[in-house]
Amino acid sequence: AIAPALLDLRGEFPALPEGWAYLDAAATAQKPRAVIEAIEQAYARDYATVHRGVYARSAHMTEAYEAAREAAARFINGRADETIFVRGATEAINLVANSWGDANIGPGDRILLTQLEHHANIVPWRMLADRTGAEIDVAPLTEDGRIDEAALIALIGPATKLVAVAHVSNVLGSVADIAKIAASAHAMGAKLLVDGCQAAPRLAVDVVALGADFYAFSAHKLYGPTGIGVLWVRKSILDTMPPWQGGGAMIDEVRFERVTYASAPQRFEAGTPHIAGAIGLHAAIRWVEGVGIEAIDAHERALLGIARAELSRLNSVRLFGPADSAGILSFAVGAIHPHDVATILDEGAVAIRAGHHCAQPLMRWLGVPATARASFSAHSTEGDVAKLVAGIERTQRIFG
Ligand code: PMP
Image (cartoon, rainbow, N blue to C red):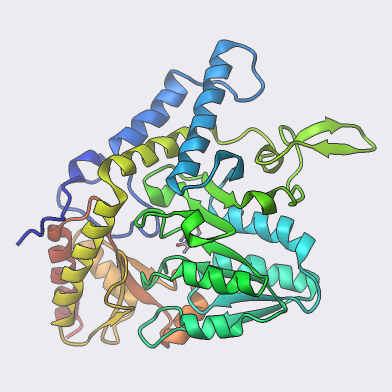
């Protein structure tokens, strides 16, 4: 039976041929026609540089670029002057580690991560710790694969300068209670960075209500283009942050002896930005707001519920992660290697991801080298779930 929450949006995605179940949105989302057309028009009709041109075309492009910033800020209930365009979540976190981190982290300081972080929210902190003599702490998970919030809070000490956590796990789909973590971090004088890569496409995000200090996400997982993402930073912190990359567009005045810098966000956007990318992100945000982020979340959770129920009826399928996770399901099929599972599923026109999902510490915690992962999005259907289940049954038959 079709649950009332299910959306019917497949027809808006031109890159989804009939019969192909694309279940890898957590890696990167397919693009609705509205986004593709906005990018095409940015190049085919409106293109010029931003911020520098005095001619009308450039002024219009600047307006469009800054309107995209306004939209990105509003989308997470932030302000435009707190919102920096970056290449993606990876660059966002590296920016914070290099700018805020180098200015605020020293020997003996502690950075608290969790066992389920993506490498993008581990490696920049490891590099910072190696540069500065800081220490990394790791919060454990509950048995069903959520951040153990009580244990995390207990690990926040007076030397903890930063807590950095994923809002939604890219492997398990588990959703962190960010507001609770923020309150505890702030009570101990620590800042909170939230990796919102998997949350922005499926949860209503309100950086003010969450109490985050830094919030990062990538456009390409939010139905927008690759090469652009958002770093939101609380204004009072942002204004203290030194520039990271130097170049054009981020300066106030340049002399060989001395450079003064523009205020944020321009101070953090050196060089010609990804203009068409920002416009594509704006179109993606409009599209998501038109559908409704709550509707997308409900749709994905409904499909995930069906998938969990069907898969748990199959012998020897192990499901990872909590039952109430958002849109992302990792699993194992007996002892069959996830790459073999994904290959056989591909033969049946089902695209899933197999591997460590850039979360090797989490794989170690799960006790597996890799998982198979199906991730849902606004265009996913019950038919996709049926094909997934049929493909796994076929895998089991092939491997006996
Ligand atoms: N964090 C999480 C939770 C992710 O899922 C990803 C992308 N897989 C990233 C960070 C990095 O995003 P990007 O590759 O777009 O920079």
